[in-house]
Image (cartoon, rainbow, N blue to C red; front, side, top):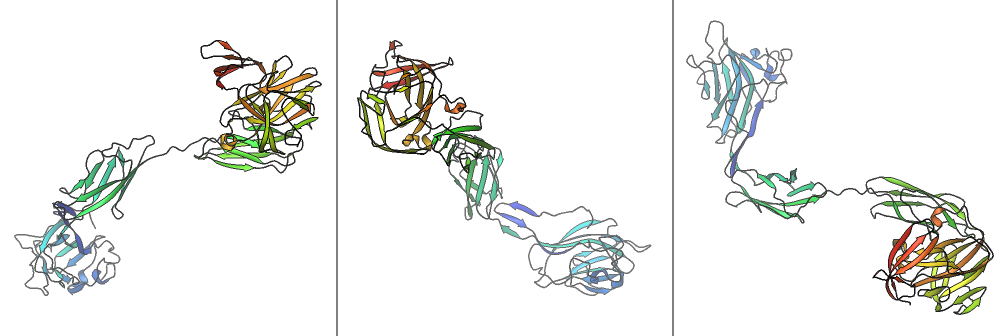
Length: 549
């Protein structure tokens, strides 16, 4: 089909509540005809779009001189029968005339339901006064008087050639349009409109506010309306209804506007433990060496991610001499791997396990351990590493070297291992190890930061404090408020190879101030400011409520 000028054609024209909807009844483009395949009779050669043609007269002249067209030379043909009974039937034909030598181009005729060579021209009758065009032209004709089984008849006289490019018959009946939303744009984002499902969906960029948005809505007819209009809160889906002009037809849509969620990229761990012994995690560090007690033979890892949307894969080691790993995959796919190696503490030369059935009591010395002041014992079950405890020692408040303490003798450099925890879930407590003069040697701080892994529900922890010096008496007591101890181990010597994550900072001094800023003693009741200064020059302050319980 050649390019051409359409004189009058509109596929869909909206008019009020109705539209001119074009239905194609017959369409012949001759696109498959070539000079080579159109021999004898092009209409019956199998290369046309339509079929059922009837050829009369000079049918042998129906050839092809230009690809995509058909020559009608001194002959005639009629189409298959078709329904031409409507009131808006239209014929569109694109053609030109090659007149016989010495004659005017005036011999093309078209009619409906007519045969033969005379009495034709009810649709088109070209005469000397209205000759056929000699350049390709598209003409449109209204067809009336047709029936449900009508046909069209095309004819030209001998010697004249009509080159036909396209024949198209359409029904332009007026039909009512169902009311539809054709376009929905909100906050500059074009929504997806599903007319079949009656849904409208749009996703806005992360951080967008959906509580007050005014969408741009287009419907499929000029005087169709919709509701609601104006600014809407899209926190929840909004129902839109489209009406035709008299509201006799309507359609509902559910409009859902969501906000894109930025995928979280946090692939770090919040807690990491082996057999209940927690590593002191440091930002940017992924390799850890964890110390387990001397009787450990197997290792079970526990890991909790900082972000709850991250996935954690725990790879337990085959035994204590093997390596383990934890792979954290963030929501956005970022991956971080924590690598763990394990060493065992030396066998202790002394162990005080308050679950061993001994008659532990306040103000006594038992198994070379002196218990002084307001200290009690009760039943309580906890598990860590190879230990399963059933009883505990309770420091019931702030202690010192003279009250609420335990003491023991050491012969020289000693590593003190303490299994214990704060007496208050969710509240950090500090245990102090001091020499006979009350000078702090180190601390065991149960910060209760292992809450998601169980600490807030009573998860036991382990502290390791190294003493370097001559033999003497060491004292252990709570810096403020309650602290519970389940067992103490003494290991001869210092652990020079101990991982940094296991060694607590050494305390240089601890001072207390009241809320006015004046110095106070550790025995002062009420709200205090506790300042701890470490041997490395750093310090830390915190508020404590000293209840002396």
